[in-house]
Length: 303
Image (cartoon, rainbow, N blue to C red; front, side, top):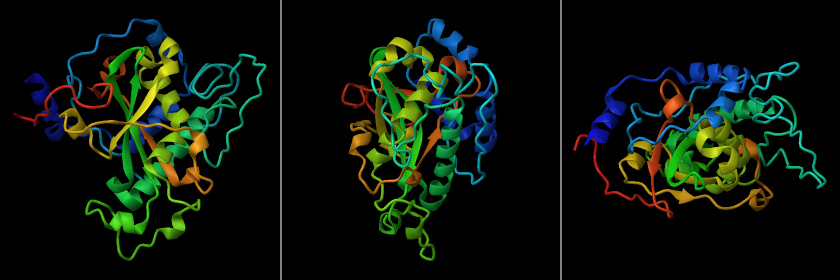
């Protein structure tokens, strides 16, 4: 099938630019005018191609240790990433209800002041780099967003989360980066090790805001935003997911479910970044039923 031949380029084709160059450029670019995002949302979304048609390269995990300096808020107007009305910008709508104050030690919030979205995203990405180096794939979870008011069968890949895990968990997996001479107990900021659900729920607002404003506003923003859902898959399982070998699991829960000893510094988020044609046509997404199960038989690349 054509989809299989297209996917083959993910393993044999070109490598993407380094994570730091891509991510630094994106953070800088997100401070520019958000008119592109607005225009994209106002225009009609392009029709979804057949499954896997645009999956022309591998989506690697970003594991570099270079720290990303959070961009300072821009002076004046501009309407950029994190500006008023934008991702992380101040909400100009007045509300008579009392605002809910989120605990910054437990949740990565993107509201409050101009530029907060960019700063929080950079912090989450830096945390991802640090923890990923310690534990690798073992502590990583892939994240997808479903937008049922747009298309209930399409699940968009939006990045990865990572969490601190115990040495016992790490050394039990042959794929981890655990080393006998490296003790990571003292790296934990909170008093409990995060679960996969906590790693996602604590960053839910950041992930959804980024996805609907910077990745696919055509499919997630505006009238679609109220029903967005987060789904998960094993870390670095994009290829298996595309080949219908992996089911997706819905992430339920809210920040109220975070345990007392949980700390958000013990988790990180690595956002998916669109390059080239993906910016218009969209990146990696898969089709699943309402339970996250593949709707077509599994297949192997080249078969």
